Length: 336
Figure 1 (tube, one colour):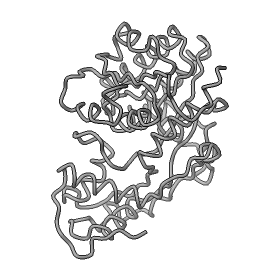
Figure 2 (cartoon, one colour):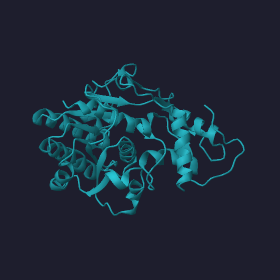
Figure 3 (spheres, one colour):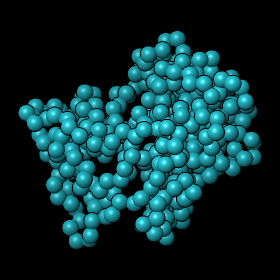
């Protein structure tokens, strides 16, 4: 393996980031540019104003090129990946519509893997999700979910969770192709990702928080969710790309909160918004957090930002980007 692979900077290396305009991908591009990499970002339409934030990143003028590519158009992906040392495959639809979800997630991933094999890239980092890990009705809630766990496809189908179903099938396809074609694949499985937005458009995980601040959600559901900061997720991608010994899957999450805890934290930081105080389900006991471990990633040296800070920075970003009106409040200060 060339000596530069373990160095701390990406000078002289070219990498491809698929779906570069997305929430997580934009942060990956930002950090890669900061580290000296030359980046080829793929997107369906590089001229779309929603991708203009990438051109404003530090180092973008010198070392970022945006390529028109579609996950289902193999030739366009092959063109973008040719000549690259590595690939970060983050592009994926985020929808629960089986038709819109399955083909791009599964066949798109296969196309990326085949193109990466053909280009003889050093390593592919695939952005998967915790949704490929913990969807299993037979798991004991006291068990700690780790990288050896897989979601049950029949359970995903029966509960019509097409996002988790498609991402699980896509990740399994990536592993099969990696084995078959000798590609060095490493996978990141993040929980729900929050934090400041670089892009002007609003993404699904931010909407999840926004609805509690706008008054559109009158109650919160009796459910739990894992959360992690987008900066941690972007750093984790680069960390597992640059660490030669990194292998397999890496769960990336800071903590699991009940929706009730989320609204309490939001109300503490931003009491001026109509944050719900009632649970929509007052009959059943409060859902208990599931246990998962990010130990494997922490062992590589990743320090996770506390979830309180994630929530605070998400709201501040939504205000700054104009997605949330700013109401002045004397108590609006941030203390952890």
